[in-house]
Amino acid sequence: MLEYFIRRLLLTIPTFFGCTIVVFFIVTLAPGGPLEQQIRALRGIGAGEASGASSTGGSVIPESALLELKRYYGFDKPIYIQYLTWLGVYPRETESFVVEPETKRSVGNNKTVIVKKEGGSYIVYDGEKQSEKSIDGWIIEPQKSESGEERVRIYQTGFSGILTFDFGKSYDYREPVINLISARIPVSFQFGFLGFVISYTVCIYLGIQKALRHNSAFDFATSTIVIVGYSIPGWALGAMLLVLLGGGSFFDVFPLGGMYSQDYSSLSLGEKIVDRMYHFVLPTLAYTIPSFAGLTMLMKNSLLDNLSQDYIRTAFAKGLREQRVIWVHAMRNSIIPITANIGYIIGIFLTSNYLIETVFNIDGIGKLSFSAIGSRDYPIVFSFTVISVIITLIGSIISDLALALVDPRIRFK
Image (tube, rainbow, N blue to C red; front, side, top):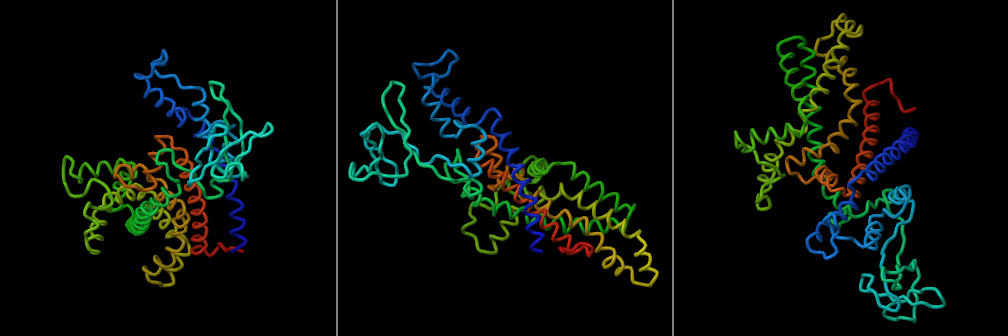
């Protein structure tokens, strides 16, 4: 077993880095990134006010300001350095400040520094003790302002990135991405787990009944329903359910969105459970119904195929009861294809629900990532990609384990 996990991990490492490379370079090189958005915003703000408006209607942004923006977003370095920095294997700038020599500068945490020029080089001193105590750890980079005045940039470096479980700070929220994601993962997990359980429970039973009643009116009716459900995307089905049952043009039965009512905190435990269930009905339907067709038809066709095998005929010839033949002999082999898809389904439910969460105004990781894609909040977009890849890889391992439990031909030896 241990050998299997080690081998599986070694095989997934190239896949992980391959996915991150493709996503990183595509997203970074795509036009309309955060730097371009910030430049347009700055020009738009000063379009009617700045005295130095350009002929195109936007204000002129000083070259030094553009360089500072590039430095802030990390676009002042080659793209391969940006990728290595994002991984956490190349040091990034931290605590960066521009100071004037011989002038105190606050560097946070109630600390100040002062930079002095001694013998042609610059030395950083404690701002309170001044020349009594120099401070190590600062990298000093002499610069000149646009007017030619002498100034110095001081900064520190450190390793932080996805390999150190530091996803950086969101451009929009100004908060660590790990905090934003950790606060929303439980929300998405609730819907993902509930949808997973309902899908497998309903689809396995429905597929069995369709196989046992093959070519009957029940088989044709249920096939029509599940195929129609499969043809409608989850977010579109959610929007349709809101119009029909959320107080739109038809019935006012369920709430328009969210996870609980405004007075949720004042409810008793039983009332809270009922309130949550009430809010979960429509989103759960939108999560699960589009996945019914694949699982149901897979279960039906797998069971039909096994019922036609020789070992099933032999079991009937021995006089075994029909229920035992179907539920004991045929079912064990029929659920093998269903089991093989468990990890894939888990990944879909946990990471591919951004549109559904947006439609129902659910503050999960999907909605957060969808908003980040629109605003080009790269730290969140990249973090969501990493989490999706990790969940998919873990799901594949779960599928292998589940497959070994139901298929006697597979052993981890």
